[in-house]
Image (tube, rainbow, N blue to C red; front, top):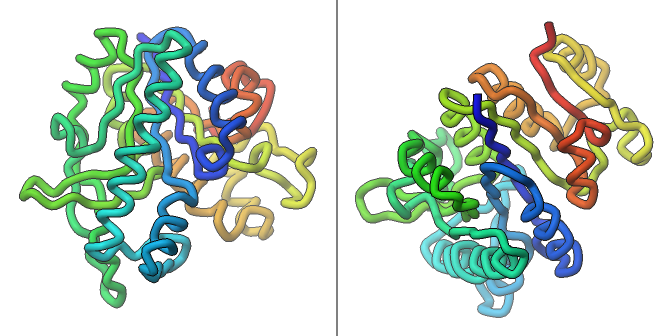
Length: 262
């Protein structure tokens, strides 16, 4: 089965110009089909502050009112997305920058919550795998900003981790998919203050034990729950680690690899 590598790059990479360039050079060097899904970093928050537009976060998720939606669309789908594409072109990687609205790649709906109005935040309904496959088969590396649409003309701000999982699961029907989450830690850690305490591999049974022991908690819980959902839907492996060791993550010699086990 043909391979596809899907990477999700977090804000800590986007916010550091030197780190971003080094990562993009490593991404460009990956052979074969690949997709990069990026977050927005702190630029949208800084721009909102310059415009005196208050920002509200709930459990790490941005409440997206109409004015904030304009900012995140300009920043994520505009400057950040096209800056990444331009750098990849400089590294001889033929990249195409898109949002979920382009080509109807990601269909979503406005989030419904019993007590919180998240504004124009979207939850994924479906993935247009046909177009993604066409682009990949034409040797395009896809760079995707976390802006989606509802099919009725409304843009939506959607969590990039979730988009990565949904695209990985959708493409797993036709490809051998590896999903890599890049963030500031070296992997899943036994001690969050010690980068040398990486757990090299985790199965669902081990995840349950680590969660019960309180070793995996807080922000890592949704990340790993997302990862195991992807594995249950056919993704071959999920890797969590630092962007500056991308070749080692791909070879399995760094980070944490999540598998369904035997």
